[in-house]
Length: 297
Image (cartoon, rainbow, N blue to C red; front, side, top):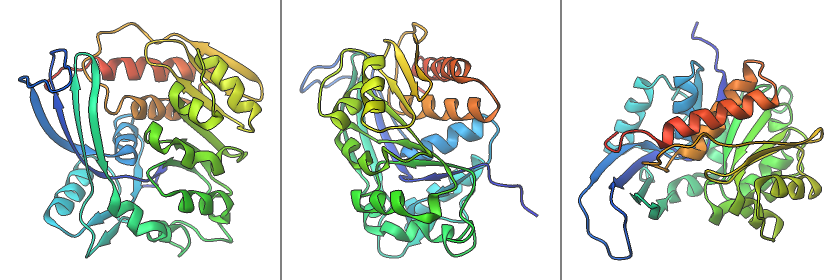
């Protein structure tokens, strides 16, 4: 019998093509650096971090039956991820993400997650056909959900009995997709992980600090939120109030995947019994270690 699954990671699983340089980059810059291709996507980044922390995550996503898809599934298995429940499409290509990062942060990025969006509810079939649950006995554990899913599918998830028993942990994927999370905002079993800009988009106003944003999201109906703000104060808002902590000061050499690392580390800390303050600090420490990683890694 295979080992139990600790968490389901639902959303984008693709190839990250990342160009990084230690140089400061301006518009039109042409500089030396490193270009890497790594397994990526929000759901994948979360799953990889969960696996590094000793959990056994399963992926629910869409991957093409092309050569890139076969490579991605093989890489996922080598990383300790459960790939048995992936939707493999015969006519949709494997998705990709491309970004350029400099010493001054993310310069530009393009996310091509059209196959995930086209697959839609097909990626959720294991949650209703008995493999991972069904309407009468929904999945009762942790689910990490990312905002690369369409607004329509996220709205269906918010109302679906298939997710009613889960501990939902939700990430917006990018500021441009933050509004897709609005249907999930008031769910009693949902925790949202957003940055300051994404919090502002959800509340349709600007915030100066993460604690201020957390308070506003709670007032808007959220039950639990975590709001990051780069190297500034980070907040955890819940019915018991808002707490905050400062990230450790580090030299930032990469940013793609930092938010996913923060979220995964926080989920793991709480799963292991940490209280709110300890879980927040553990997540900040993990994110700081990640963003200060070697430029060639």
